[in-house]
Length: 159
Image 1: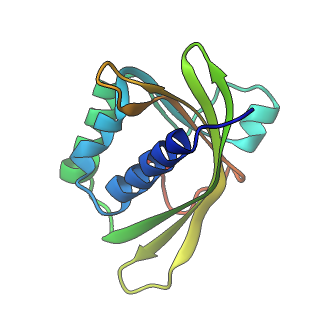
Image 2: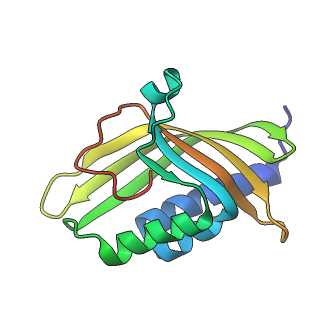
């Protein structure tokens, strides 16, 4: 499949914005890079391989993502931490009627105040990205597949 370079750069920019909003904020803007009707699901590779519908985190609309962001910013009682998303190997797999299927690798690092930085999670994104009415790229579906079902501490921030 031949990919337009301009599209590839736009897709890479969307992933960079995704990581930046989760890592540096403002987290309240994170839901804005998704369509109103969207799906965000974090699951494990085992769940995918066994075709289990289990999710570590599931949001089925932008409103649910907004609730998640609000809870993290205003309601969570967690130890202060920093997270850092590394996204590599971004590949536009196919064009569909709904947009583009895109896959990428991710590694997320966590630093809890006063402790050493550790790998929090690693895995693969399987996403559907499309243009909105204004021509901007947004996530229609984001599937975050963790290589391990074990998550250090708890899953507070989206993957």
